[in-house]
Image (cartoon, rainbow, N blue to C red):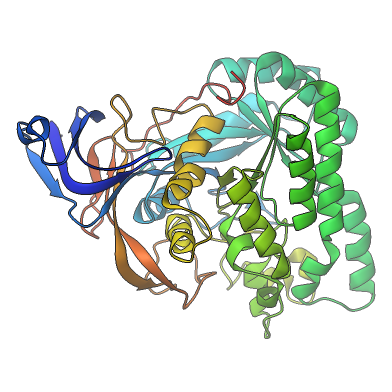
Length: 467
C-alpha cells in the first residue's frame, strides 16, 4: 500500500465549496488540503503524485439504493457484488448501500447474514446495508433495535408487491413507531399495490400485454396516494420518512407539501426518471421490457418537476435503484404478460456521468451534483463526513473527473453484467478518469486496478438530518 499520495492542480468540488487545491492523502484518509501553489502544498512529499490539472477532484459517489443479486420474479439481478461494485467504481461511485431482504417467516438477522455472505470478500468498493422488512411482528420490532445499534439504521417497507414484500398500513405504522424510538429511518416504496394489482388483472383481461402497459397500470395518482398515506402514517408515528425512487410530479407535490409543513420527510429520485420516459416503455418488438421498473417511467412532462424538486431540495438524493436483469432469458420471461417482466434497470455505472450531464445542460450546479450524489446520501444514511466529502479525516474516496471528455453510453463499453444499456447511444460530456477508494487506486487513468475484497462493510450511524 502506498503511504502518501498527492493530487495536484485540480478543482476540488464538494457540496459546499469549489477551490483550486492540492489534496494530501495518507493512510487511506484525506490528511490535508492546501490552495494550489501555496508554500504549504509545495512542501508535501509523497510516493505517488496524481496530476489533476484541468480536471475536477470530487468525492466518490455514494449510491444509497442498489440491489445486487436480488431474487425477484423467479430470477436474480444479474450483477453480483463483485461485478456490480466494479462497475460502480468505473462510474465514480465508491460506496453503495444495498438491501438485505427479510423473507416472510424468517428473522431480520437471517436476511442480513445472507447478504453479508454474498458481499464479504467480493466488493471492489465499500458497502453498507439497509434492511427490507417484509414481516412485521414483535420479534422483528425487537430486532430493529439491535440492528440500529450495530449500524444497520434504515429499514425499507413496501406498499407494493402484495404477497411478496407488501406491508399493510398497520404493519407500516408499527415499524414507524419503532423507528421513532430507536432512531432508524423508514424507507418507503410508495405505490398502492392493492389497487395496482386490480388494474394489472383488468389490463391483461383486455389483452393489453405489452411492456408499455406496465407504466399505464402503475398510475402516477397511485404513487401520489401512497406517498401521501406514508407521510400521514409517519406523522402519526412521529417518525421520519424517506420515500425511494420518486417518479411522478404528483408525488413530488406531496413531499413538497409535507416539507413545507416542517415534517422530517425526504425524497429520492433516480436517473431513469430524469432521462427516460414512457416513450422507452413503448419501444417495439418487446424492447420496452428493458425499461420496466417500479415505480415506472413516466411521460416526459414529469421530468421538469423532478429537476425542479432537486433544485428546491424537495428531493434530496439521486440513487440508481440498480437492479439489472438481462434482456435475453430474464426480461423475456414477460413476453405475452407484462406483469411477469422482472422489475429493474441497470444504472450504477451511469449515475455520476448522467448527473454531470445535467450540470452541462443547466439543470443543476456543480456543487448540487456533488450534494445529491455524494454528500446528502452520506448524511442521510449516517456516513458523513467519513464518506461524501473531501476534508481532513474523511476516507480518501476520491474521483479525478475530466469534465471535457466526451463519451457515448453503450452496452459495448459498460462494465455492468447485463446485456443492454438503458442509455444506449446517449452522448454525454464528462468522464471518470481515476478513482481512489480509501487511498487505493481502483481505476487508474481508465484502467481497472482494483480487486474483489478491497471493499469493506461500513456500519452507519443514524440519519444525520435528525440529530
